[in-house]
Image (tube, rainbow over all chains, first blue to last red; front, side, top):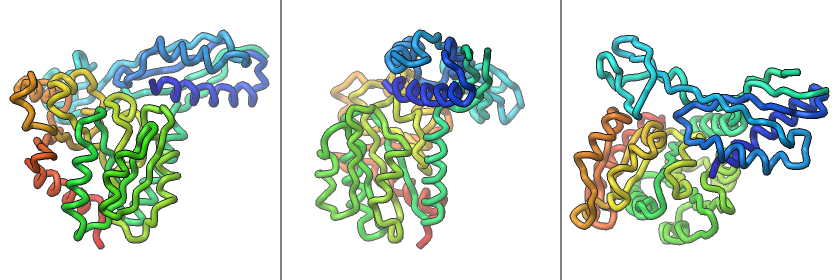
Amino acid sequence: MHELTVVSNIFKIILQTAKNNNLSKISKINIKVGRQRHLAPDLMEFAFNSVSKNTIAAGASLAIERVDIRMRCSSCGLDFVVGDNTYLCISCGSPKLETISGKDLLIESIEGEL
Amino acid sequence: MEIAIMKAVLEENDDRAQEITDLLKKKQILLLNLISSPGSGKTTLLERTVEHFKNRYSIAVIEGDITTARDAERLEKYNIPLVVINTDGACHLNSMSVKKALQKIDLDNLDIIFVENVGNLVCPSEFNIGENAKVAILSTAEGDDKPAKYPLLFRESELMILNKTDLIPYTNFNKKSFYMDLEKINKNLPVIETSCTKNLGLSKWFEWVEQKTIDGGVIK
């Protein structure tokens, strides 16, 4: 249940951003979560609802964009999306891969009212 | 109105982890983060390791435990610096708590710090603590499907220890499917098979640690 830790961090960052920009209400949080992360979106929402209760972010929606696990093969240079937990180049079979995306855990933006 | 943020959620953790990395590099200390399920044999592995290296390296251990100090108590007999981090329910260690723990250790005469993370295959792999390497430990009684079910840890680790191999005859652990799964998830991950209670396979682990101290610049 490290979703609570992650969501608490999100909450801290968005409250600071809202304060810096004089927002009186946060209605939506846009975040990116890579598929390599063991994070369950429904648990994140549940944790967010608990953490944001009685704050300017109460009732805000957590828009989670899942980011594919994308690798670049160090042997043949191919970019590909990892499916079925198989970290082998789909063209040449090499295990020497460089991560392009998939471990993302990023707050992109918030939406709200002044 | 929309306000762009573009900030990593775990930035604070990653920043503190980087500070730990920088500090320990300066002090020429190797930090190994041991991650596994509860009961895989992490503490027994540490007992064997501390015993083996007692005349060779100065070792400290940081024990992540949800509520007790029982793992640390098992290591007290070696008279080494030991710090317990009680996470009060949290399922993983983070770099903030490890940094605080480091303040309780004299870093001037130390070669290796082992961190025994909270027993959990999921959460600890998400949080860097400034380690030189993560080491995944799996015991055969947990089943051969664990790398397939918890791939992140087996992607992030630099070494895997398959412990309790002496128990294989009493379990349904299938070595062939274990290695087939692991080949898909991380073909480059070295695996050392051990039985810590029967003292099997440990010399390869000790060699790995020694090599890691050389790679990590621990030359004293």
